Length: 99
Length: 374
Picture 1 (cartoon, each protein chain N blue to C red):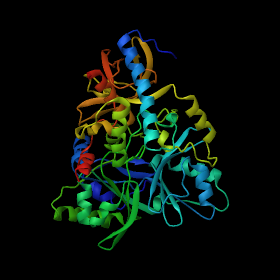
Picture 2 (spheres, chains in turn orange, blue):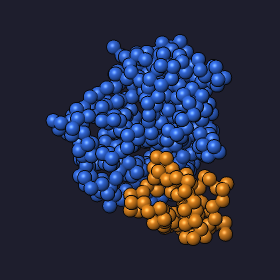
Picture 3 (tube, one colour):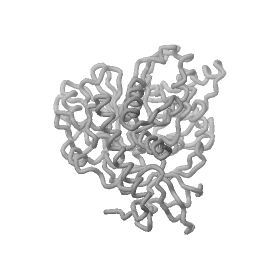
Picture 4 (tube, rainbow over the protein chains, first blue to last red):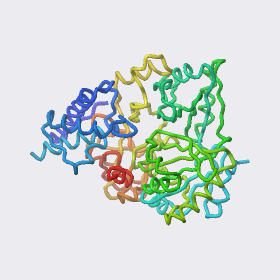
């Protein structure tokens, strides 16, 4: 079923989420050498523990990757960013909106 | 007649109510849902998990069998490690969500109690002559201790080495001549340690744990299993007693439970690969209700609307005490199911209620905060 979105702002937001989610998944795969394809990672995949099973070293690598790819800086107090793939995406979008 | 575990009387003395599940009398509620919720999210609670399904797989052919049955690589799981995966049929539909424990020369499969007969039936369907399948559920009992204070307690109760037991690990342990397998798994976002021991022995262990908690001046409360649904919900963990229905693994976001690149042709592989290649049209997301806080106001399968278009439905609700919000799990059209998107539902009383997609887990738990500070 195709959803009709009449609100332009929402249309842009949806497009942003689609695009950035795909880019974040690619970044994770490439940076962390994950043996996965983009469509093998759920949007809501948890990063640590159950889910992708990443560790704190991976978190540093991701932070560097996010800065290089999206120009966003992840500070220590942004711990929440690393809950899931989609939390990273939302962080990026929020940062971009605030620039 | 339903099975009463050796700790049934302990829970009964604590005024627990019980439910019959899969042939067991399972403690349902002890001190009220809200109090038990706070115990498990802020302190330390003890639960009876003895009714959980436990199947032992052994025999010469066990490795080939396990690799064929499960969509994750199993043969090379190191001893003492646990893998979380699904059991699915040829069409890729979920039969059960399971934990696989690798012991010396065999595997244990753990799952929710209601899945016991389905799992056994499925395993026996594909069993080869050199594989032994034993339903050992009734041969064991299991005490679980859950909550952010649990690790501190266990360091005192067992010893400091317990810090080294990783999440998804298990090992033999012994305290005061009581032997058990200590297993660290769970979906609640809190420390969750399971102590698995022979049938009839849980009472001695429980009494010892309760006494020790008093000695260490740590509060430990008995909790029923009813509250677990809310804790799982907040972490968006799939509660297979309620959440699966006819949703496929990818719609549920369980991609990580499947090794798509596994070379061996496991059951459901081609169906799951096709699902992955085609993508999903709908997915499960967590939503928060704007102002409604009454669970009874939202019926199962309440339709969800975006700009007057029906885009899915809410199939499960719970009240989050931490967030002081009614939350729901919704099965929505993937195109529009992104964080902070707002939709509308109609409550039972006829009023329009706004809902917003929220990220999971809903919040960072005390356990995660404690673990990151240590």
